[in-house]
Image (tube, rainbow, N blue to C red; front, side, top):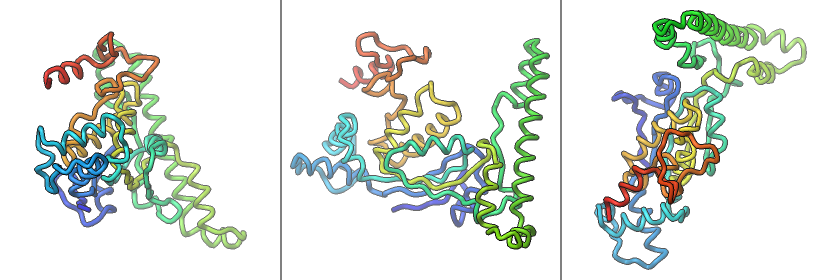
Length: 294
């Protein structure tokens, strides 16, 4: 398995140093099953006794039978073939984004523990919505909506105050200096730290490692690339798909929003932003691409 702790052209010694350099709302691929696409092609070929599949990357070139078998298995939801590959990401995201990953199928997680780790090193940061940014507020002023801009500034100050206070108090009540008090009261300091985590809002960052087979990455990516998904979650999925497509171009080269894939739009309430073909309810760009390859 290939392992690489790199971000923005800089290679770090380990995942801890990497996460310290990563900005919030970032997902970085740190490991993947090298040669997985050849393995996938052979797994599919094994099902059908297709002996023409080669044992090297040439089998995945355009128009080669290995590529056709792999994409056929993916598009027909022959999931087990795609599950023979795997990839690992390290993520630094707000807790409310991390919770979406709990809905993934066949995923393994390891998260930074606030039971054993301290917040006094400044590693606890927090998410601020884009509509509290100076640029967004200034645009409201320029549109003649100064009264709304002032309200946004007030809300932003309260947002920052709430998070800073939560971090400050969490850090205070989990400090080692209070261990003597907890011991005298018959309390385990580690247990106290466990409960004090409840002070932290869901906008506080967390860091964790996420490993899944390739089918699980496809399934969750398609669901959260939909324009009706929460913006922050969709942005994270787009980062992941872009990285997966570089390593696994056959499997992820055209993974996109569900309306661009063969299943069409699964939502009862449409986003209203994507034009769909009335006969199949597929996104029109997808139909054009399919027709151009015939």
